[in-house]
Image (cartoon, rainbow, N blue to C red):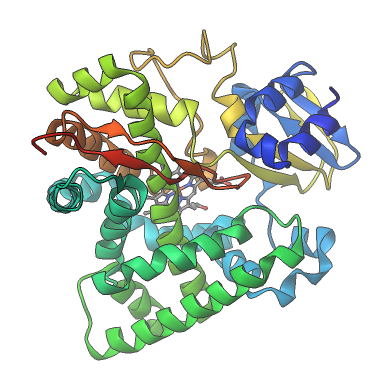
Length: 407
Ligand code: HEM
């Protein structure tokens, strides 16, 4: 299969559901290959990492959207995310990231551990109530979504009562993060972005009247002091990004970590007894099933990437999920091995856009999964799990589980 055929197969429903044979088909041609004029694909670990660190490879921004999809500005969802740091290059990216990064230092994240633990236990109590009569509980809706949304909600300072609504709007708005393949598919994403914008504008009004000790108050203060530091569109864009990036991906990590524990009862047993085992287990889950499958960059000027010439204007697809199974970097790449030495998957990206929430996402999974398995030792898959039909952030949609007797 040629690389262009493999990429075409990846975007079909079957390809989205099981992308790995198609990543491997690309790998047969090389770790970094031309697909068609103006497009390259990277599936190697070294190549993806080098691309993420290469300053002349830029994230898709207003300029690249103008070239590839001239009609994009009529979509509020695309405008919204393009105002966030994820789709800005230096110097804008540097300015925005600096404003937010202070809230995500490793020290601050570790201080959040008791909050994550308490919320985990509260949600486990709730699951126990819901499943007490032996009926199945949807792990995604009742736990995997609620924990990360609760944590990012607390960090931002958004009311808990709004959090269930976030799941619905996020499901719609994140379609705009899938890459601009089909502008027609963005109607629901635009409506969701409009709703989120109105929601945050309302929250700004509250914070000006009643400041809190949270990131939202802090960013509104930065904006009000000098709108040149962070204008209102950027303020909203980054808050929407933090909100949806803060839980959508982590929800899928939690679902995947539990599905893996069901497939490997020996690891589930170790997770129950040995809390230190959780870090390696979570990292290996992230490697084999990264919540963000791919990202992309475009060459602002001619770039030599590990010996391959990338002409100016070319777009480079970076298949992080394929890089995580590069046999040159990960021996027996398709095998789940939580004891893998120097396990450094690219699940959180790299370079200047390295995920800001990586420590937080790891913390949530490391705390939650062992506590869940300890609390319900007979937890079992009830059957009927469903998956989202997405290219970039797929993952479980519903995951019914039964708690077992004595829960
Ligand atoms: C960026 C993955 C959780 C906030 C990224 C990128 C990846 C990623 C791959 C880089 C994209 C690129 O370079 O094109 C993940 C995964 C997560 C997760 C797999 C969970 C398992 C979180 C959480 C937060 C967060 C919990 C916030 C609380 C962000 C932000 C960026 C980002 C703000 C943009 C950084 C920048 O552009 O400088 N994430 N993320 N993420 N992530 Fe995460």
